[in-house]
Image (cartoon, rainbow, N blue to C red; front, side, top):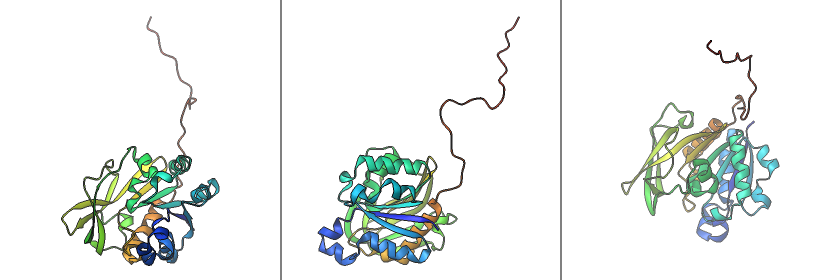
Length: 245
């Protein structure tokens, strides 16, 4: 059974009645409820818990970490960011959701100071087109997912070229966006998935939850060889250089 930790900064739901009305149990609670039927071993963690709820014990027993943040990226401790970063390099999967594109951990893994983009809140229809129908993250999804209202994210999205592009979004106002991208870092796999603005009930949408569940299964640690770095002894005898007479 995959061990999944859902991390949410849990600030909007506390401070904003409109968001609290949509997510009374917090975004992490909604995600946990939605993912429960998929048979994962689920736990949640939030920003204001000791060590942001991401102690070494928690992370060492996490196969895949989900990350939602927005208001308080700067409050996330660099020590914890480095801890999560190392776990990803060691093989833990990471799924970054919506405004987590500005999270310290995502920027560190992307190797950039900013993962900037365009945005607009205008109650727009979003259509997420499946670009790679053979990809396991798109399993069980048709040609597209349509969301009646969502926040717009638009290109240019300042990220490195992804290893794989799974979804592209079209918005009612005309913009497009790379909404589902994957990366490999070290032994770890990363999936960024765009939908999930805090004032919309996106995380109650069964297709959106299905994509996230597929992402968890895809990002799960693989039983691959652990790379070895540094000075290495030869595997067999090395014959010395022959000197011409």
